[in-house]
Length: 196
Image (cartoon, rainbow, N blue to C red; front, side, top):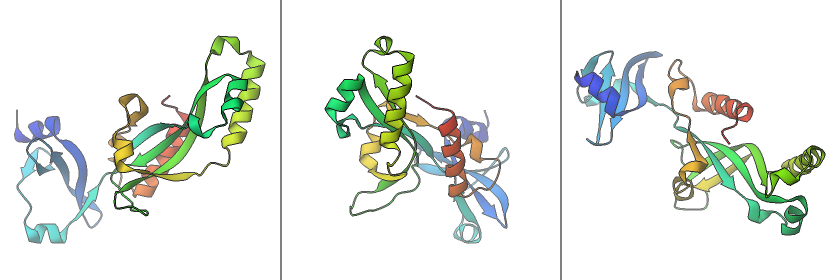
């Protein structure tokens, strides 16, 4: 196995060096070795010199995640009981490479709301007509939720595996895209193709 193959198999592709709009080489992060690796095709490039780094621009890929945040405690308990709703949630798209400091020393992630949902405590006992009526009532109740929210990094990073979905970077490798373009595309994709 060549060094480049080893890097591609064991490291994470996090970005690329760009010069004049052209991709110069790929940037990989090898967590086990605690270093960045630079690949140009099947060739590895050693540690970059200061002059090389100063002439090039590192473009990091967005690290897109879809998260589901349960928010049942914010609903009126009687309203939920009358409709047989067990729990509710919001689904957000976040970029873990972007951190914001909003009234806190701890970093926060910017979260874009793409969907809201609920589940019945006993789905078999709800008729199709009631299901449609309750869904419409629920959608009306969440229609005014904030489209962008901020959650602390530690809160998101502690979510259980069944509440997170890693989008990955495959969709962003083909073109030089701004983070905004990628986020917009991911929001549209997951709004139409639900994870949960």
